[in-house]
Length: 195
Ligand SMILES: Nc1ncnc2c1ncn2[C@@H]1O[C@H](COP(=O)(O)OP(=O)(O)OP(=O)(O)O)[C@@H](O)[C@H]1O
Image (cartoon, rainbow, N blue to C red; front, top):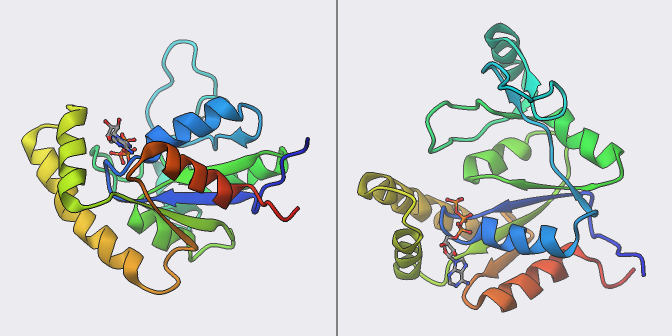
């Protein structure tokens, strides 16, 4: 059976720790050929075995700065230091679609606002944790950030909640309480049953 998707590009957003990677991991495991990853640009040197145009688009700082200024990139506030490097260009997303694959962008609220200014017309999905308390428990349980980083993420999550409440911010809001239920809802949002 052919699986029809509701759109060629999806944006998955939500507070850090809301479960985006967990859900995407399940999705890519179940549908290994449907989705493609956009190739990011970076100004760092290639490591051994890395190929230009395959692992990354390796570019100079000058080129990257110029293209960011020209609005060719999706801008987001990364928690991991280097603003926008690696970064996702609009063309890199379009390249995935041209290859016949579905592109899913896992980005923060700032990224969502940035994508909305481009010609990309994705479906916007918000992954919402059941509550701030649960989000905190999950972030702490993940044991990947120190206290400072956890507090930064919790503070940012409040803005993410506020933004998601605005009408038309997202096409679909999925509350990630029970993982399997949230996953079923995600598939429902991605695969168009009416086709
Ligand atoms: N439905 C769920 N029930 C219980 N735990 C969950 C659920 N979904 C995710 N988790 C756990 O919560 C933690 C955060 O999930 P995950 O890393 O997927 O979040 P994320 O949104 O990708 O975060 P980041 O934006 O920081 O990458 C992980 O330890 C994950 O195993």
